[in-house]
Length: 191
Image (cartoon, rainbow, N blue to C red; front, top):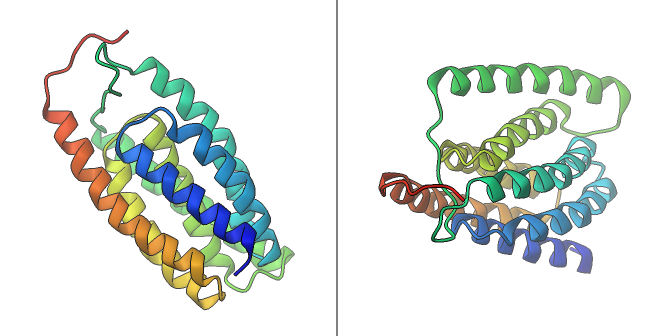
């Protein structure tokens, strides 16, 4: 455990908590956490997760832009339902991306868990895109991903990060409940 991992974990937890509350500040906080965690994962030889943090930094900017377009007159971010076709096609494309990425990591790097690393990264990108688009389904996907990451980070000796991802599972449940509650409220006109 390093000071950088501690700062990254704290910023990540804050970012997820802010996201569950649908607070716009979640995006710059998560962008900074992603950049810092990229360094942590590079040091741990988790290359797919390192690259994923770069993608997350870019997706944080995208999410910020998307959420600005989905703000209601009372300042709350509008939650949007996910259509069945987008749900299944997203899961399928993420699986394919994870398999291809796993093969690349196995043949090109010293990643100790190439397939798991790549699959979790691919599904994390999907969950982040769903979050940026304000689909409440992102939360249950995050819960599954974060549970698997908890195991992987424990196996890699990143104990603080493993603890953080265990907390993320709890935050994913809380986020899903909050967003589900927000989705049943009457929709107000977007600004």
